Image (cartoon, rainbow, N blue to C red; front, side):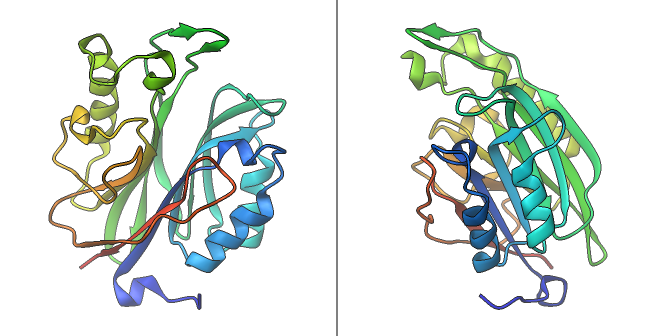
Length: 233
């Protein structure tokens, strides 16, 4: 897809993608870079990014080989498929400012060889023309892996904390991409719409912002990439 100057067209192209730690062999940087280029993204929220300390080879590849040169990451828990840690990230065409990182409460769930790891939320602000925009990446606990339901009252404080963090950064133009690990968008209790219903991945945005969700893009991951265009007046 040819590059379009979004600041002129007033269309912001946002994606969210749980990259599954880069696939089974953790070496899918080329595929991630290619998707970003083909979709001509302005912002990409990522989940399950592998970090080696504070550095991520995947994020380095994105910054060095795409237009999304502004990167912020948040390691959260031990990686499953690689050495190091797994976490969330934001990659953007525009400078990311006022970055906030939050670790959400861990319910300490255990089933067979699985246990719940720390999940989190990161938000930042970017200048888009003369407007300020909040963007975020959110990853919630996979309650279903433990035979539990995300809407159980015992987990309410986790959703409340996530909602509090989003509300703190909320602007009239706010886009939070994430793996909610549930189809229940209402658990956040926020006045935000969801671009993609029926699955665990979505981009949340204010009702007043017109959106055009695209079809989910199959990938090497166990999650597709979700992309939507937003009309930013």
